[in-house]
Amino acid sequence: MRPLIGVTTSELRPSSAGTLRRHGEPPHPEMALGMTYLRAIEAVGGMPVVLPPLGDADALLDRLDGICLSGGPDLDPDAYGAVERHVELGPTEPDLDAFELELARAADARGLPILGICRGAQALNVARGGTLHQHVPGHRQTEPATATTQTVHVEKGSRLASLVGVRPLRVNTFHHQAADVLGRGLRAVAHAADGTIEAIEVPGAGFVLGVQWHAEGLVALPRHRVLFEALVVAAGAIPALRAA
Image 1: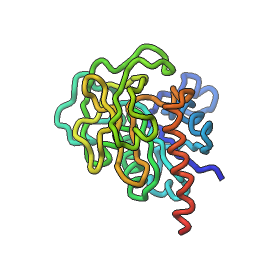
Image 2 (image 1 turned 90 degrees about the vertical axis):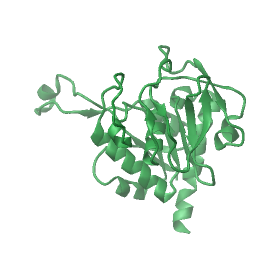
Image 3 (image 1 turned 90 degrees about the horizontal axis):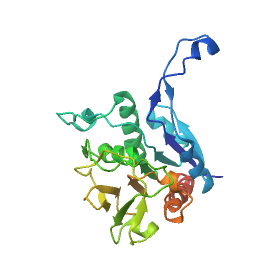
Image 4 (image 1 turned 60 degrees about the vertical axis):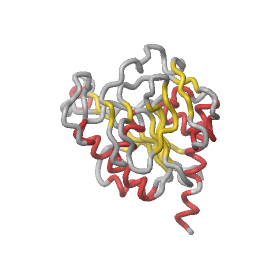
């Protein structure tokens, strides 16, 4: 059985103008999630399932072996107790934030493998009590996600280094928020040239890793594909642990 990996959908978009005509109902928000996350997980042997932001987040985890926290819009500063809102803060979805943070905390408490991508890494940090820089300039490329435009430096001795190595790693970059104060038990394990935290992880036996770059867009490259491979391998061990 391939491990079942839940992928969050942290973005809502207005429905198309033709919704009323096609379905006989008024326009309503629709979930938005890039297929690249799902293809990346499937390509390395996992079975991806999209998680709607509905109901009891913890109950969803009963049937899942791992979690991928996807990218998306800015986290609302209220989620981490920020008093002021930066002028560059984009649109936020507090209800979606609440669901995703609950899901991340519940998965963490169960010891499920977690891979956070961009916003997902930020959500992982906030879920553990950390805070964010609301605006970091110079980290949004205009090139496609398959292009690498930034170099990050990986910390020796980290789980990330065991996966991608310690030589400088070329990545894409589409974020303007990043971890500030680290959440409980988290370690910063990669940095950009300007000092921005580009990856965080929980040291130890479990698999909890967040990266700021969109690795799903670079899955054709072995040093990025390995992140999804590691998630699926860790998730594959969960059924046996449950049965023990």
